[in-house]
Image (tube, rainbow, N blue to C red; front, side, top):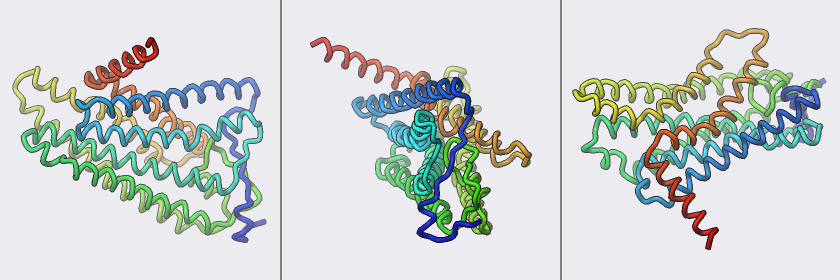
Length: 316
């Protein structure tokens, strides 16, 4: 049986299967994800606050890092709060509207993050390969324009792919084998022709690969070529240290996405995708600010000053 009435589709409710249904496992999962969510919010907001109050960090690199932290907060907030609510209520139900919102914001966050990482790679290229012209290349107007473009392009792509879900009809089966709503699990529940959906999703994948992965790879190849020309070992270490944090984040993020979209299909795809989704939607927002903080002397100093200021304020 199909649900094809446009007014009825908004009344459709799906069941998010999530992970284990065993009560003991459920509480363990709740505690782990609640802890990760709290950690992601605290670390990202602390990083944003530290950069905001430290004038030394008011540079293009840290402006882009603030944008990345905002994306991280959005990414993890799309899926985890609803999952925690479902575990507590034991209902695991989400409305079509709620599902549509999750798809829209998850795609927006994913697309924007890919573009921001690409822009940050270009920023590191300009700093290492064009140091004398860095402040001209990455001037304030350029940074704001690039960051705004990343958010707008990510939103446009997300709006198209999420909006196409409104044209689908859904069959009797409403069980989504995932812990939040994504395109592919929803397509599997549809009784409609999803050719257009798949084409637009593929177009978005190609667009973000070309505009995200290729510029990032090119930037780091140019950085590597420049670093290899530096004679002193100290100079090479200093050059690598300026981009090591970003390179680590990019490697984790892009390797995860390439595995998802590049691996051959298998009967166990749903379980694999669900588990891998934890990396880019939950783990990455937790560890990104930690990587940038622990491997960056300036950020560590700003965070130390921020914490001491808070302690001093509380003692007064």
